[in-house]
Amino acid sequence: MSSVLYDAQGPRAKRRNIVFSVVFLAALAAVLWWAYTMLDEKGQLEWVLWKPFFTGTEAWSTYLWPGLQNTLKAAALAMVIALPLGAVLGIARLSDHAWVRIPAGAVVEFFRAIPVLVLMIFGLALFSEYTNVSADDRPLYAVVTGLVLYNASVLAEIVRAGILSLPRGQSEAASAVGLRKNQVMRFILLPQAVTAMLPAIVSQLVVIVKDTALGGAVLTFPDLMASVSPMSAYYANVIASFTIVAVIYIVINFALTSFASWLEGRLRRGKKSTGAVLGVDAVDELSAPGDHVDVTHDVDKGP
Image (cartoon, rainbow, N blue to C red; front, side, top):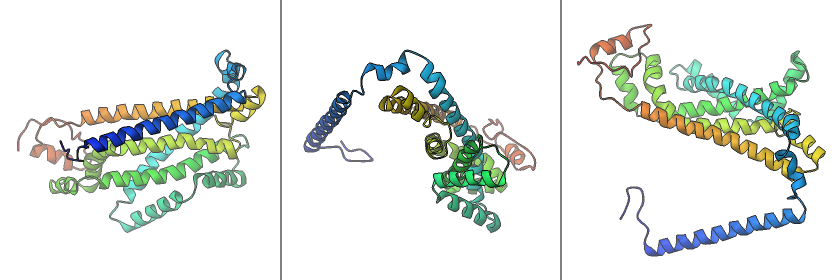
Protein backbone atom coordinates (compact mmCIF):
# COMPACT_ATOMS: atom_id res chain seq x y z
CA MET A 1 0.00 0.00 0.00
CA SER A 2 1.38 3.41 -0.99
CA SER A 3 1.18 6.62 1.00
CA VAL A 4 0.69 10.13 -0.25
CA LEU A 5 4.24 10.98 0.84
CA TYR A 6 6.15 7.83 -0.11
CA ASP A 7 5.79 4.36 -1.59
CA ALA A 8 5.40 1.43 0.76
CA GLN A 9 8.57 -0.62 1.24
CA GLY A 10 8.88 -3.99 -0.40
CA PRO A 11 10.24 -7.17 1.22
CA ARG A 12 13.81 -6.45 0.07
CA ALA A 13 13.78 -2.88 1.42
CA LYS A 14 12.39 -4.07 4.74
CA ARG A 15 15.13 -6.69 5.08
CA ARG A 16 17.77 -4.12 4.18
CA ASN A 17 16.47 -1.66 6.78
CA ILE A 18 16.47 -4.38 9.43
CA VAL A 19 20.07 -5.24 8.61
CA PHE A 20 21.12 -1.57 8.75
CA SER A 21 19.35 -1.12 12.10
CA VAL A 22 21.03 -4.18 13.59
CA VAL A 23 24.47 -3.07 12.34
CA PHE A 24 23.96 0.45 13.70
CA LEU A 25 22.84 -0.82 17.12
CA ALA A 26 25.77 -3.22 17.26
CA ALA A 27 28.20 -0.42 16.37
CA LEU A 28 26.64 1.89 18.96
CA ALA A 29 26.87 -0.81 21.63
CA ALA A 30 30.52 -1.40 20.73
CA VAL A 31 31.34 2.30 21.04
CA LEU A 32 29.57 2.55 24.40
CA TRP A 33 31.36 -0.55 25.67
CA TRP A 34 34.71 0.83 24.50
CA ALA A 35 34.03 4.15 26.28
CA TYR A 36 33.01 2.31 29.44
CA THR A 37 36.12 0.10 29.48
CA MET A 38 38.43 3.06 28.82
CA LEU A 39 36.90 5.08 31.65
CA ASP A 40 37.02 2.08 33.94
CA GLU A 41 40.69 1.44 33.17
CA LYS A 42 41.52 5.08 33.95
CA GLY A 43 39.65 4.87 37.24
CA GLN A 44 37.11 7.52 36.19
CA LEU A 45 34.14 5.40 37.29
CA GLU A 46 35.22 4.98 40.89
CA TRP A 47 32.53 5.97 43.36
CA VAL A 48 34.79 8.41 45.19
CA LEU A 49 34.83 10.67 42.10
CA TRP A 50 31.04 10.74 41.78
CA LYS A 51 30.23 10.74 45.48
CA PRO A 52 30.26 14.57 45.95
CA PHE A 53 27.27 14.93 43.59
CA PHE A 54 25.08 12.30 45.23
CA THR A 55 25.87 12.15 48.94
CA GLY A 56 26.33 15.76 49.95
CA THR A 57 25.32 19.32 49.10
CA GLU A 58 28.74 20.99 49.11
CA ALA A 59 29.35 20.56 45.37
CA TRP A 60 25.88 21.85 44.54
CA SER A 61 25.77 24.79 46.93
CA THR A 62 29.35 25.91 46.31
CA TYR A 63 29.81 25.35 42.58
CA LEU A 64 26.82 24.08 40.59
CA TRP A 65 23.92 26.10 41.96
CA PRO A 66 25.66 29.55 41.78
CA GLY A 67 26.80 28.77 38.24
CA LEU A 68 23.35 27.57 37.23
CA GLN A 69 21.80 30.75 38.62
CA ASN A 70 24.10 32.91 36.50
CA THR A 71 23.42 30.79 33.42
CA LEU A 72 19.66 31.08 33.83
CA LYS A 73 19.93 34.80 34.60
CA ALA A 74 21.93 35.56 31.45
CA ALA A 75 19.71 33.34 29.30
CA ALA A 76 16.50 34.84 30.69
CA LEU A 77 17.68 38.42 30.15
CA ALA A 78 18.77 37.60 26.60
CA MET A 79 15.43 35.92 25.83
CA VAL A 80 13.35 38.76 27.24
CA ILE A 81 15.23 41.34 25.15
CA ALA A 82 15.88 39.32 21.98
CA LEU A 83 12.33 38.04 21.44
CA PRO A 84 10.54 41.41 21.11
CA LEU A 85 13.53 42.98 19.36
CA GLY A 86 13.61 40.14 16.84
CA ALA A 87 9.86 40.44 16.26
CA VAL A 88 10.18 44.18 15.60
CA LEU A 89 13.09 43.68 13.19
CA GLY A 90 11.31 40.85 11.40
CA ILE A 91 8.16 42.89 10.89
CA ALA A 92 10.22 45.91 9.87
CA ARG A 93 11.83 43.87 7.10
CA LEU A 94 8.35 43.33 5.65
CA SER A 95 7.51 47.03 5.63
CA ASP A 96 6.44 48.69 2.40
CA HIS A 97 8.59 51.70 3.28
CA ALA A 98 12.18 51.41 2.07
CA TRP A 99 13.47 53.71 4.84
CA VAL A 100 12.24 51.11 7.37
CA ARG A 101 12.89 47.89 5.44
CA ILE A 102 16.47 48.57 4.28
CA PRO A 103 18.00 49.64 7.64
CA ALA A 104 16.27 46.74 9.41
CA GLY A 105 17.62 44.33 6.82
CA ALA A 106 21.12 45.76 7.15
CA VAL A 107 21.07 45.36 10.94
CA VAL A 108 19.80 41.79 10.74
CA GLU A 109 22.29 40.68 8.10
CA PHE A 110 25.21 42.38 9.85
CA PHE A 111 24.74 40.87 13.30
CA ARG A 112 23.63 37.51 11.94
CA ALA A 113 26.94 37.17 10.09
CA ILE A 114 29.16 37.81 13.14
CA PRO A 115 29.97 34.92 15.53
CA VAL A 116 28.29 35.36 18.88
CA LEU A 117 31.64 35.01 20.70
CA VAL A 118 33.04 37.99 18.78
CA LEU A 119 30.00 40.02 19.82
CA MET A 120 30.55 39.05 23.46
CA ILE A 121 34.21 40.09 23.33
CA PHE A 122 33.26 43.34 21.62
CA GLY A 123 30.64 43.97 24.30
CA LEU A 124 33.16 43.38 27.07
CA ALA A 125 35.57 45.90 25.52
CA LEU A 126 32.73 48.36 24.99
CA PHE A 127 31.55 48.23 28.60
CA SER A 128 35.13 48.42 29.83
CA GLU A 129 36.09 51.50 27.81
CA TYR A 130 32.92 53.59 27.61
CA THR A 131 30.75 52.75 30.63
CA ASN A 132 30.98 52.77 34.40
CA VAL A 133 29.86 49.15 34.75
CA SER A 134 31.85 47.44 37.48
CA ALA A 135 34.40 44.78 36.58
CA ASP A 136 32.30 42.12 38.31
CA ASP A 137 29.23 42.88 36.19
CA ARG A 138 30.93 43.38 32.82
CA PRO A 139 31.02 39.68 31.87
CA LEU A 140 27.26 39.39 32.42
CA TYR A 141 26.55 42.52 30.41
CA ALA A 142 28.87 41.36 27.63
CA VAL A 143 27.30 37.89 27.45
CA VAL A 144 23.77 39.28 27.34
CA THR A 145 24.76 41.87 24.72
CA GLY A 146 26.29 39.28 22.44
CA LEU A 147 23.36 36.91 22.82
CA VAL A 148 20.80 39.64 22.18
CA LEU A 149 22.47 41.06 19.07
CA TYR A 150 22.98 37.69 17.43
CA ASN A 151 19.78 35.91 18.43
CA ALA A 152 17.53 38.91 17.78
CA SER A 153 18.80 38.89 14.20
CA VAL A 154 18.13 35.17 13.84
CA LEU A 155 14.69 35.52 15.43
CA ALA A 156 13.92 38.36 13.02
CA GLU A 157 14.45 35.98 10.11
CA ILE A 158 12.28 33.37 11.81
CA VAL A 159 9.47 35.89 12.25
CA ARG A 160 9.78 37.11 8.68
CA ALA A 161 9.79 33.57 7.29
CA GLY A 162 6.83 32.58 9.47
CA ILE A 163 4.72 35.48 8.22
CA LEU A 164 5.72 34.93 4.58
CA SER A 165 4.79 31.24 4.87
CA LEU A 166 1.12 32.14 5.28
CA PRO A 167 -1.08 32.06 2.16
CA ARG A 168 -1.16 35.41 0.40
CA GLY A 169 -4.93 35.26 0.38
CA GLN A 170 -4.99 35.84 4.13
CA SER A 171 -3.73 39.42 3.88
CA GLU A 172 -5.61 40.08 0.64
CA ALA A 173 -8.92 39.02 2.17
CA ALA A 174 -8.27 41.09 5.29
CA SER A 175 -7.46 44.15 3.16
CA ALA A 176 -10.57 43.54 1.08
CA VAL A 177 -12.83 43.88 4.12
CA GLY A 178 -11.25 47.20 5.09
CA LEU A 179 -8.54 46.31 7.62
CA ARG A 180 -5.47 48.53 7.71
CA LYS A 181 -1.96 47.10 7.33
CA ASN A 182 -1.15 47.18 11.02
CA GLN A 183 -4.47 45.49 11.81
CA VAL A 184 -3.80 42.81 9.20
CA MET A 185 -0.46 42.13 10.85
CA ARG A 186 -1.76 42.14 14.44
CA PHE A 187 -5.09 40.38 14.00
CA ILE A 188 -4.56 38.09 11.00
CA LEU A 189 -0.94 37.28 10.22
CA LEU A 190 0.91 37.23 13.54
CA PRO A 191 -1.62 35.05 15.45
CA GLN A 192 -1.45 32.42 12.72
CA ALA A 193 2.32 32.63 12.25
CA VAL A 194 3.11 32.19 15.94
CA THR A 195 2.19 28.51 15.91
CA ALA A 196 4.27 27.85 12.80
CA MET A 197 7.24 29.79 14.21
CA LEU A 198 7.17 28.25 17.69
CA PRO A 199 9.43 25.21 17.05
CA ALA A 200 12.10 27.39 15.41
CA ILE A 201 11.84 30.01 18.15
CA VAL A 202 12.27 27.39 20.86
CA SER A 203 15.28 25.94 19.05
CA GLN A 204 16.84 29.39 19.13
CA LEU A 205 16.06 29.75 22.84
CA VAL A 206 17.88 26.47 23.44
CA VAL A 207 20.84 27.95 21.54
CA ILE A 208 20.75 30.96 23.87
CA VAL A 209 20.99 28.73 26.94
CA LYS A 210 23.92 26.79 25.49
CA ASP A 211 25.77 29.86 24.21
CA THR A 212 26.02 31.29 27.71
CA ALA A 213 28.82 28.73 28.16
CA LEU A 214 30.96 30.82 25.79
CA GLY A 215 31.02 33.57 28.37
CA GLY A 216 32.17 31.14 31.01
CA ALA A 217 34.90 29.74 28.80
CA VAL A 218 36.32 33.03 27.48
CA LEU A 219 35.01 36.02 29.45
CA THR A 220 35.36 34.61 32.99
CA PHE A 221 31.59 34.79 33.37
CA PRO A 222 30.82 32.62 36.44
CA ASP A 223 28.20 30.44 34.78
CA LEU A 224 27.54 26.71 34.99
CA MET A 225 30.33 25.81 32.58
CA ALA A 226 32.84 27.98 34.42
CA SER A 227 32.07 26.09 37.64
CA VAL A 228 33.63 22.93 36.19
CA SER A 229 37.21 24.20 36.47
CA PRO A 230 37.34 24.96 40.22
CA MET A 231 35.03 22.05 41.05
CA SER A 232 37.06 19.46 39.16
CA ALA A 233 40.28 20.87 40.60
CA TYR A 234 38.93 20.56 44.14
CA TYR A 235 37.49 17.04 43.78
CA ALA A 236 39.97 15.78 41.12
CA ASN A 237 37.11 14.45 38.96
CA VAL A 238 37.17 16.18 35.57
CA ILE A 239 35.09 13.58 33.72
CA ALA A 240 32.47 13.39 36.48
CA SER A 241 32.19 17.19 36.71
CA PHE A 242 31.73 17.63 32.97
CA THR A 243 29.19 14.78 32.90
CA ILE A 244 27.06 16.29 35.65
CA VAL A 245 27.13 19.73 34.00
CA ALA A 246 26.19 18.19 30.64
CA VAL A 247 23.24 16.40 32.26
CA ILE A 248 22.06 19.67 33.80
CA TYR A 249 22.15 21.36 30.38
CA ILE A 250 20.22 18.45 28.88
CA VAL A 251 17.55 18.65 31.57
CA ILE A 252 17.12 22.42 31.12
CA ASN A 253 16.86 22.25 27.35
CA PHE A 254 14.59 19.20 27.45
CA ALA A 255 12.26 21.03 29.84
CA LEU A 256 12.26 24.03 27.52
CA THR A 257 11.42 21.97 24.42
CA SER A 258 8.78 19.96 26.31
CA PHE A 259 7.06 23.16 27.42
CA ALA A 260 7.18 24.46 23.86
CA SER A 261 5.59 21.25 22.54
CA TRP A 262 2.82 21.55 25.10
CA LEU A 263 2.29 25.22 24.28
CA GLU A 264 2.25 24.54 20.54
CA GLY A 265 -0.39 21.85 20.95
CA ARG A 266 -2.48 24.12 23.14
CA LEU A 267 -2.27 26.94 20.60
CA ARG A 268 -3.26 24.62 17.76
CA ARG A 269 -6.26 23.32 19.70
CA GLY A 270 -7.28 26.85 20.67
CA LYS A 271 -7.21 28.06 17.06
CA LYS A 272 -9.67 25.52 15.73
CA SER A 273 -12.50 27.33 14.01
CA THR A 274 -15.93 27.35 15.61
CA GLY A 275 -17.60 27.84 12.25
CA ALA A 276 -18.92 31.27 13.23
CA VAL A 277 -19.28 33.82 10.43
CA LEU A 278 -18.13 37.40 10.88
CA GLY A 279 -20.86 39.83 10.06
CA VAL A 280 -20.74 43.35 8.69
CA ASP A 281 -20.91 44.89 12.17
CA ALA A 282 -17.88 42.90 13.32
CA VAL A 283 -15.88 43.95 10.28
CA ASP A 284 -16.80 47.58 10.85
CA GLU A 285 -15.61 47.31 14.45
CA LEU A 286 -12.29 45.81 13.35
CA SER A 287 -11.69 48.49 10.74
CA ALA A 288 -12.65 51.36 13.06
CA PRO A 289 -9.57 53.31 14.20
CA GLY A 290 -8.46 52.83 17.78
CA ASP A 291 -10.60 49.78 18.43
CA HIS A 292 -9.10 46.58 19.76
CA VAL A 293 -11.37 43.69 18.97
CA ASP A 294 -10.69 39.99 19.47
CA VAL A 295 -11.16 38.43 16.06
CA THR A 296 -11.77 35.03 17.62
CA HIS A 297 -14.93 36.32 19.26
CA ASP A 298 -18.00 34.53 17.96
CA VAL A 299 -20.45 36.75 16.15
CA ASP A 300 -24.02 35.58 15.92
CA LYS A 301 -25.11 38.09 13.36
CA GLY A 302 -25.09 37.07 9.73
CA PRO A 303 -24.12 39.23 6.80
